[in-house]
Image 1: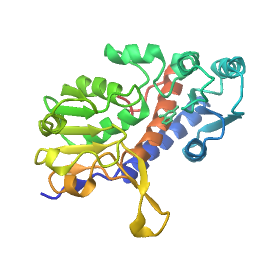
Image 2: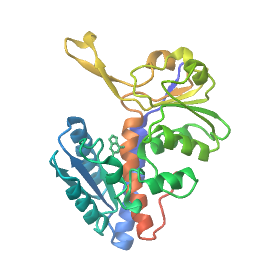
Image 3: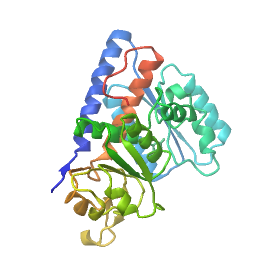
Image 4: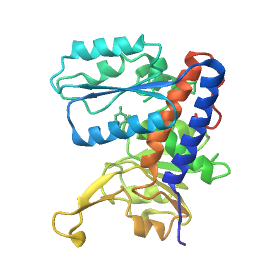
Length: 300
Ligand code: GUN
């Protein structure tokens, strides 16, 4: 079998189009423009790239973008004061503090100081609890994007065996909650799971989010399974020339694609969906804050 390649880039474009259309409507009908504030502390180059991309895409869908760049040695009290201002700013409906934070800052304290209603990352402990108990919440962007792709590819995922490889708070755990919500039978496996290939081989749906380049191989995959690759790893690519690198996921793409029914590529799979879902979450937060009808198909 040769797997269908799930085109996350194209799907993300359709999500952005839906978001943009809904933004036009609420601007016209209610004179409200959704706004997203992104806070970056320090100069981590990868984070700078993400933040630039987020700002650009936010304005492209008609929302307001507010960027706050703080020095790497910013005091915790100053960061908390900024978040407090954003929590109380009527123009801001979504707040994202780019992670990782410099080590002198308490990440949990910072995240939990964001108003849960504006927590478009879905990392606030209230949103984690709401999601875990099946209540309406803000949902982390990467797992939300994975869920959207799975729902789009399958008529129904109810009753399917889903194996998530990776137990992070950002992807693995919320992904499990979302798949349970769609009535999958869910296993969270990780790098220490015994007989990991055997566990993965039982899955109709595999979500690879371990952060280890090309770890999951084709002979771990059940014939016809759907494989979602969340990993983004930069590895050396001597075949491209000295010092060159390339991006790979957590799956060994070629061998997996030879067995799977469908698979997401890296780049061009989950990555573009994450930012599209951030925009969708900002719109959802704005609608909830103002008591407006939420966009359909853009939430869990
Ligand atoms: N850093 C890497 N991914 C993310 C994310 O999804 N949200 C935030 N806030 N920081 C990140």
